[in-house]
Length: 514
Image 1: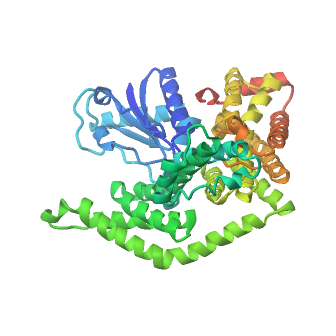
Image 2 (image 1 turned 90 degrees about the vertical axis):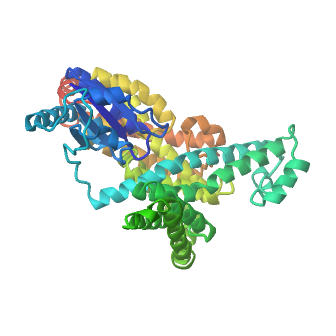
Image 3 (image 1 turned 30 degrees about the vertical axis):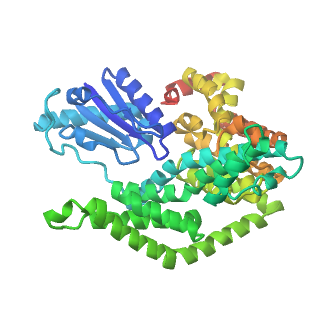
């Protein structure tokens, strides 16, 4: 049979492409042809309409709403989550084959190559309210992350240059040269004060470009939560609501609230039954006018004040952390980062760290230390499996050993998802081992006081991290602890290395999907 598929995950990075490769390989192994469209963070290349027309069935391996569903009308559809495709691609292929055969038996599936008809052949999977809310939230996070990454790294580079350009206190001096939020003042500085040969000038310019990118963090989060709920009509009220939330001091918590408010409000208005003459102006006038007005008023008068108090309290608590309380926070964040490897709990910890960076003036600030702890802990799982497969190769299948080699680069680049194939194949032994190492690393980073303003990059942004040697020490210790735990758990209740290897060969594995 021939299948077309769409894969997508909340962040549009690792799971999206792992699912695509797993489906293609599982299809080939079963004698079928599978073509996958990845709707990820790097955008997507739509499937050739000819491939869709020739396909016997369609597979949705998606945690987000599939874009362009109308292209597949009339085809038998198998709708699963992205993790199902990563963990059990052969099972998904078998399910898709069964759906096609059932549709043919019922006489509802068009022949391959025939024009699709607007008939819903297979019902989509039932998604609960909690899962939907998670989808909406993670849609916002996925669109927010590029703003965080670009802005945070540019701010960190600006600070790095400033430490060289100013003999002392460069991190403070770079913020005093000009107010980048004042357009007239900044334009005057560019005209009269900027020098192409001055390190100070470049430090100030890069710092403020990063701050501008960071300024879109809450509006982007809010806008794309609303987009996930209401599609395009949700973007405007979500964007304005997020901007207002930032303006009144409600922070990212306020942005989450305005995103849901703007999205559901726009969705409700878009479903109004109106006369034909009004339909044309609904999306360009009525929906944005009403939704922006309501969201703006509620943000200023109702949402803003309590969210500002909560945001201020959170910032104050972070700033007050020291000693054992700081270490405990690092341990908790390390556990969260390593529990679901790119899933909701991991992303909660990551968003908590990145949104705090907006209030960090230097790498010695509490939010910068939190960011360093989160990033170091997130690097541990793939590095731990890479080390374990290198030290005790007899414990692993050939595919797992090969995946272990690629996990070195993924771990060093702060891509926690590199350990997912191992966690998926053996969760009860792998996940606790990862969490142990992540907790050790997170706690040590906080104890050492290492900080960073770059929200991503892993080992490649080491120059932007304060106390880099202590940061590396924490990472190495946590990785070794986790790798030892992985190997010990693999041996727990087992026999010799050869017997464990035999068990590994018979165990279903998706390691090659990485």
